Image (tube, rainbow, N blue to C red; front, side, top):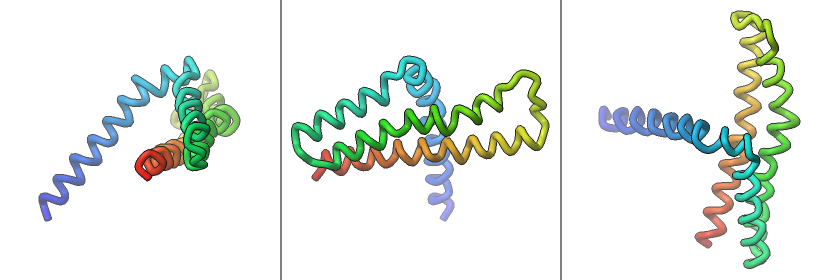
Length: 124
């Protein structure tokens, strides 16, 4: 059983580290340039046109959906969190941070769905 906990601890820490590094090196720069989501969408759409496999199109739609979710759903919460003079110790700030986490989970789910769809389409 200790080996299983070793594995879980290592896997958890490594996944978290990978996600954190990804956000700094890839997601944030992509957000600034709006390139990555569009590139994945275009590549998925091209594969759909080449193969007529609708799974590629569904993956492209899922990754493209990250953009409006960010702009329409998450941005208002970000704006409130970044208001000048915000009391960082307030219960309202705590609620906003918890809300941001739930909203960001939508982006994570869409990205995972796109990845799974693309992998499935590529291997079947």
